[in-house]
Amino acid sequence: MLGRRFALNPVMIFIALITCAWLWGPIGALLAIPILMTVKVIGDRVPELNPLSELLGLHTVAEAAAAPVAQVPASLAPGPIQEMGSATGSGLVE
Image (cartoon, rainbow, N blue to C red; front, top):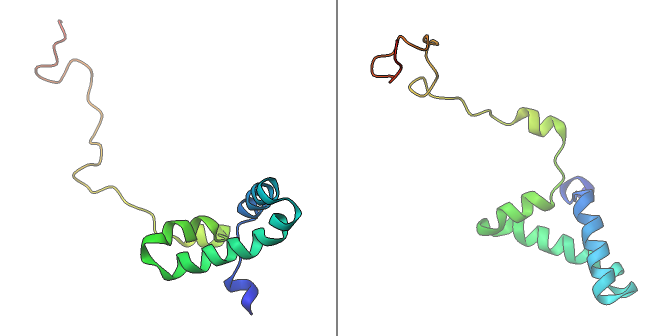
């Protein structure tokens, strides 16, 4: 039950293990995952740290596919393609 809630990004786990083992040796390697989990829980609870929590969290392809896609407003969408010389004031000499 808790495994789904506290899923961590495997790349971030690897980086934390390497970094903590480099800094503190074997004890750091043992403490890396609890420290990373604590940072994730704090990031989940503090709104300003939500981007950090998203970085540490595990995202599946299904979640990414279900995310809303931003649509370009009609006023910014490109219009029909014009010929090179047809635009007035284009600076082209005919």
